Length: 276
Ligand code: NAD
Image (tube, rainbow, N blue to C red; front, top):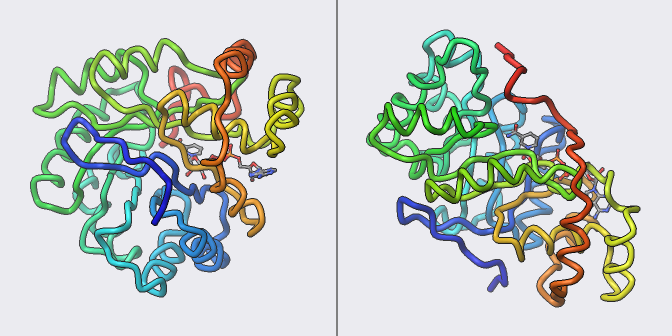
């Protein structure tokens, strides 16, 4: 039994609200780290082709003995693959590395908007979904105008938009656009990679509840309704980041963390960054 709530996506599929992210988990330790996460109780894993660790994730899944339907696995289409017209090969390649017949969620990793090739990539994702290679499809790092373009061109609305969100970069305009279209918001770098653990409202709430700053920030996302998948390679942190269902932030504590917004990014700006 797990206390992690499920969120129902706009296509009817359910996703565990709290998962485990594996960006920057080295390929040769991914199996061990993901095994610790699965033993802890995480059932939702967020990886990507570009992370280079899908094989390790797959090995941990195979070793776990868990039923496939009890897991929620996300991977992502990298920019060079869709820019060079390889979208329909990229997902089978990821599936082979993961040792799976399907993923639960497949995302366009980054819009790289200069030439709008992400629009064709979206149409290709719709086809991959129709073929049963992924249950749900979505996007990542899409700004509101990118969302409008794929919604206008496609038959489906993305199930999720995965964007950088943490207390010092809340992307309210993107969250509002997601809400307007019925798209679930996923927060990447939800802990700002540790950069917010000394902020006063975070420290105060941690002291008041007798929890860690990381647990406070995870609660802040959960109570706001966002999907998140904090990353750690340290077993104790992997476990404590999952132990967040025994306390609740007050409205005042939520608001004080909301007030930390200052537009400070960890990663690149999708409006201008065009990898691939
Ligand atoms: P994060 O905000 O989850 O922070 C992870 C870092 O925070 C760790 O490396 C560690 O230094 C620290 N940390 C974690 N738990 C801690 C604890 N309990 N106590 C103290 N320190 C702790 O950052 P992230 O890995 O960048 O983001 C999480 C996931 O989001 C990634 O693994 C990946 O799955 C996803 N992501 C997606 C994109 C995208 O473009 N779609 C980009 C970045 C990340």
